Every structure is written in C-alpha cells, then in structure tokens.
Image 1 (cartoon, rainbow, N blue to C red):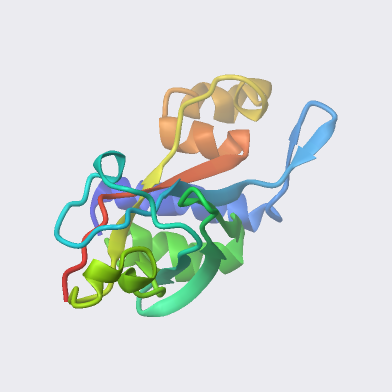
Image 2: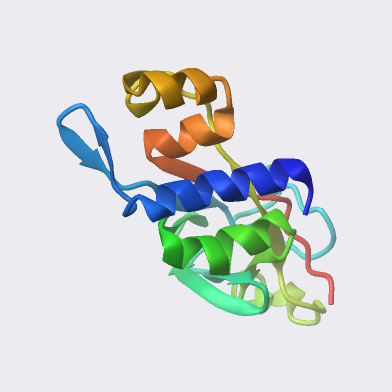
Length: 177
C-alpha cells in the first residue's frame, strides 16, 4: 500500500475508533459513505452516461474484494444514490481498505436488454470502478479542534471525513467480460 494510502487508512481507523460520531457544534455527526450517479443504457467500454439514454430501474450492487457490500435500484431516470453505511470499523475493512487498492466496483445486475431490446446480445456485466472522493473543509470539527484541526485542516481527505461525508465516485461504466 502506498504511503498516502496508509495515511488515509490511519485517518479512517482514527475516526472509526472514536465510535464513529463526531461533534460539530451541538449536533453529533456520523460520517457516512455514499456513491451516486446515472446508470447508462449502453454496452461497450468507458461509456459516457451523458451521451446515452439512462437505464431506468436498474439494480446495482457495490462489490468490494468480491463481496457485495450494498445495493440499490436506480430511479425511472436512471439516477441512483447508494449509501455504503457509516464510516466506522465495520466499513473500513470490508469497503474503504479494498477501495484504496482498486478492488471495489458497481455492478448492474439487471440485464441490458431490460432497457433496450437491441442490447440482448451484449456480453459481460455493466460495471464501474469506485474511487474515494473527499472534499476539503475547514469548518465544523476541523476548525473546532486546534491541535488536530491545525495539523489536518489542509488535508482534504481528513477534512472531508471530519465534516461527515465520504463521497465515493463511480468511474465510467463498461460492459467488459
């Protein structure tokens, strides 16, 4: 694992070890990990979802290290939001650690023929790689903890986690075998 990945994993374990809840002002914040996007109704490699019709009502699974960790169904417009759960000790090992090693993806379990009959002969499963995307913040807990905040406020990964949300982004969908 690269040094940057080790630091991120250490930060995640620090947060998970703290019970998964952080105080931000008067309210407790439980950081959570989510992924959202649009499922394309297309076959091929590196599909640009903005250039093809959406796949309505597609069933999706988040798979990390060959284990299904979450699932959801896209809406009638093909959009989805999947909550992978709170960032705690139960999420770090099975989801975030494999994600750092490029072992997580979204898989569409609904056959492509359900959105377009001409795709009935399409080979493979429609999948997209998952990557951790955390935005920087300097408010809330980071600025409220002078020692930790001062050391970590400039690090977008830790700042984003302390702010309460880890955004997971899906790469382009492909239907490779």
